[in-house]
Length: 195
Image (tube, rainbow, N blue to C red):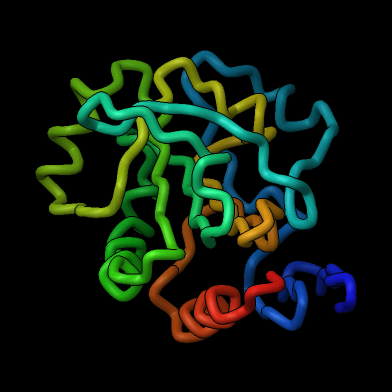
């Protein structure tokens, strides 16, 4: 069994164990949509967190008060998205996340976790989700715990985590997650027991 190697192509592709994520950027801060009250200096404080790192564990409640712990999902491929209701680019990409969710929702080894950074929590998130008809799982992070855990500089930011808990792709800014190359890469990650 060979050790997987990470190769990054200057903002064009990320390849881990032969899995290609075309167009996902790790070398630039694509969109800077800072959280209200959060200083811009955090984005420049160093400590880039992205592809190749082990995803930091966390526990957050979903919209209905049920706790979700990342480490308990070990062995699954996780699509972790950080977003907020006030973020225009988040709303721009969320329909494609819904498409991705519908495509993979029956796969027991795949999970979408869309983590809201809204400080008012469920009171603003539930009406937003209901109005837009999103059915993928939503977690609440009103204290913005993931901001430090994942070195978030703004929203949206997305992390793809493999079965071993490694981040294999990290994208900053809105993206079309319904693209065929993204689905293909996720299928390959899901098919690979070594990923």
